[in-house]
Image (cartoon, rainbow, N blue to C red; front, side):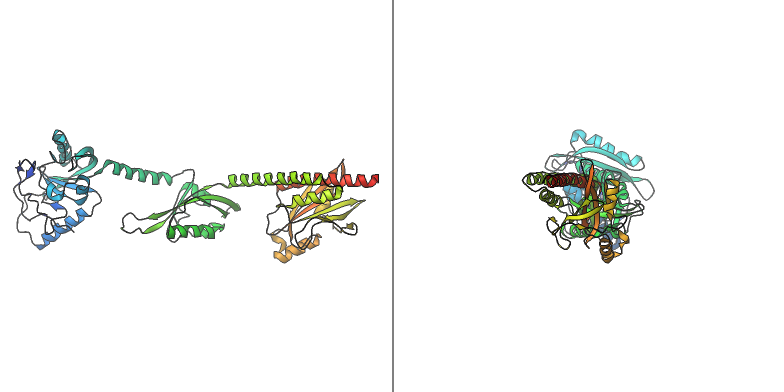
Length: 491
């Protein structure tokens, strides 16, 4: 803590015209207090009396400590333009110590070029005649002779009688000020309606600031989301998201963006979204050791892009499977073997089971199927075709009636795993079946049978793109079945 050089009485002020100390006021002897350091000062009010007591000394020491602790450079002038205060930040920027600065008459010849001194001093001291703060920019000289552009804020200091007694001036390097303004402008812009979400999360992982994009993505208002646990907003995926936030608080930001699939609870129901997220650990700039304030979480909704990418990958894979199936089928002498081989290729990544039921008269008979209790290839039914006992309204029968495709699922009303197993058994399907897609086999304008694909409960239900793929497979299987019947009829 630096000590003030105020003595309690005011020395007579006057210029010292020594060649090495231009415009140095009398009484500036370079003694800066007990330790020779700290923010030096002399009283602004030249009319103050002598005999300062211990309370005055304590006040001067407190003032010196406060000045030294400031982040901005500060100097002050009395009514005659003599430097009365000079803190450590001013010394850091310009290189002149407090002992060298306090007591000088203006900046001429040491902190400002003599050619510019009159204009600079006039602009600074003009604050005595105007209320409020005045902002200026001009170049000052460092002790090493280099120049630095600073931005100043000056204001008058009133004496005990309400009359101007001097001027104080706070200044900083222009580039540092511009950097600060840019940082503030950037933070304000990020928290406005930009094209990505910004959420500031505290150390308890609760939102403290939410911009407009993030509020829309989370399904709430900017103020209504503050302080609420993320688990109230995100139905599924919140554990992964909170784990990422906790990791950033403990270890720092990851090196690359991460993608999170989450399910949100909204007024329209639950919806699944994919967020590409980046994280920044926020630490206080006012402490020597970094103290975490929370996490800055920035994200964009990339659901549409991810779904399109997944669909493209799925289409590419299925096209490749059909191409490989065609090459394999072309080497099969038996058309029914070709049909089952084609179904084996079609099953990969598409379904867990497949059932091939062909028309014999007015009935559907089971001709080929995959194993009901374990994964395996599609094989022809041994020992001849077995009629299937499908009840009225069965999806396979509906497909025949409509000459099209039918999708169905056990749904939430099935009553859990046991209910889903009963649902599948009632339809003569394997017990693990929870989603089904039945499509008709057509060739030469005739209905030859039904092809049914089944998925277990741990997979998604069949969708429209799946129907198109199933119908493509059914068309090829129908051609093989039709060829088998034609060959058999020719024999």
